Length: 230
Image (cartoon, rainbow, N blue to C red; front, side, top):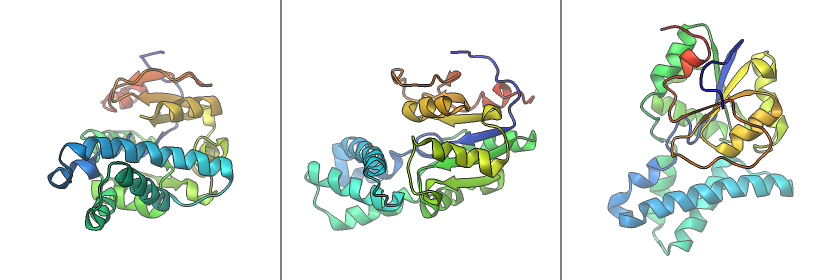
């Protein structure tokens, strides 16, 4: 992977969950109730959430991300033998208030101040995305928030990535797409985006079509990478 610069970038588009927002935060905020089960719950919840989006896309049986998130949590709680309806409701409420990673606000504002178009492109439903954006106070740093709910199919369908091209009015080759999810990074590259894989947790490279251009462990270097000066 190149680690220097991306040329001729006109827009920076971000995945939301895991890239801008910490998907483990909801469970972590409930450690008093979950004890040492908080991380296994967070990981199983997230894993099933993703699997259900892919499986529903293949089954052509769409349900929005909020429903899928609840169904994945129900599976995870049952698998870990956690029987607490009040805790279940608390976890879902916290999912609407996920913590943003520390650098997110500053990076988005640097990009906007430098004249770059900025957007979120996410599996999230409009409700969940708007709640997360509002909680992180980053609405002013985004041109648009794009949800797959518009076309009712999940990533990694090419039609999802086309949404960003259509709504931002730029060519795919001039979009820098940032995702912490390697499968998403590869799919976006395969579609035609320039891709920065935000590998926050030192994951192994996926063996999938597409190839991210650059790998980082956080978003801080992004403004310089897309050609903006401090």
